[in-house]
Image 1 (spheres, one colour):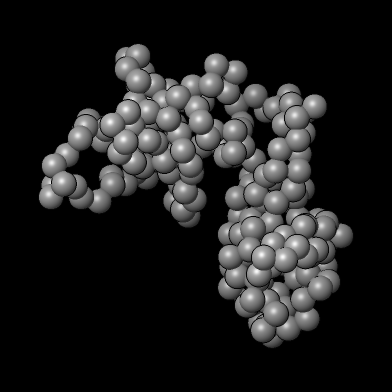
Image 2 (tube, rainbow, N blue to C red; image 1 turned 90 degrees about the horizontal axis):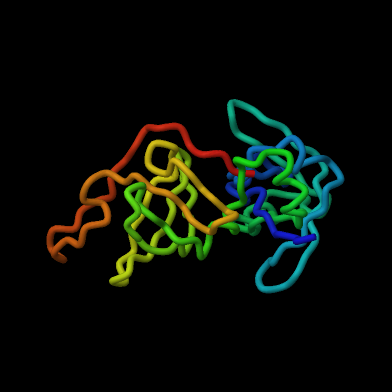
Length: 194
């Protein structure tokens, strides 16, 4: 059995005066992961602290939660940026949906072009509202942001430790320092994550 820490959400802005906070979700299963009574062990100013969900609600595609230990807006604002994570059994959950994965499982995977060329190694993931970005370290040390959408990343193969990519032309080509511009955007639907 392999336990894996999974980030469920990052605490955002305080909402109202009674300690409620907005959440930036990192899970496709908020109804399961954010039940009243769920307790999260978090780092608050370098000190461990427990936060227990008192109530949770969704409004206009935003999720809000209040915690037993947070009584007012000032305490809620101090939690901004804190990550809520849970330990899960990765093997058990992968049986439920073999095409889903956890972001932490992608770090260290080789990134290979669909034509077989080695592009680099996944060193991280950045979360944005539209989609996640795979951060890939190329063989020559560059850092490339690859949008994690099905058109550009058609396969994530955890068993063989490889991510197959079909990036747009030039994304992984080295550019002279003065010609590097913003990363391309895509409007394709995001890939599944738990």
